[in-house]
Length: 76
Length: 110
Image (cartoon, rainbow over all chains, first blue to last red; front, top):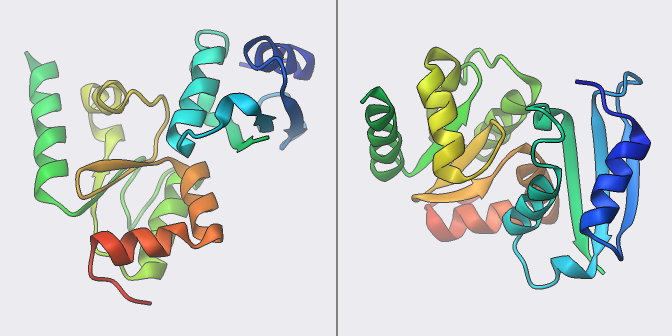
């Protein structure tokens, strides 16, 4: 289900207030995104935990299209 | 009842195989680019693994997501532990962490 870049960015920033977010549209169709998120919230957490935090923030908003979101998460 | 069977099969697979990849399609014929990527990485490392095709059974497909508390496929398990999906595997390959993991948990040297 297509999601606007602004919506995706807002969802991420709502959950990670200090985050630097770089969103890339991979296919030009608003349906395949790559999100690089840098946030202090990720400190000390494994990659799996970091990605789970992002998935939790987007829960229900992406309507099962999470496979179309590539994630790179980093601690600040 | 079949949901419990799916869960039991998942647990058995993870316990009885050193490396398990829950994927779309199988290792010979992946049916998704992300699954193909992870299967390809394992082959590059020369790691033997069991491929489990989640497309064959909707309860398996949902079951592994519930079991791992992870919403996407593929999912890689090494020695009973969830390592990650495609993005994480890619990062770990690039950083050398995956090599280290295999050397530590299996007896693979590259």
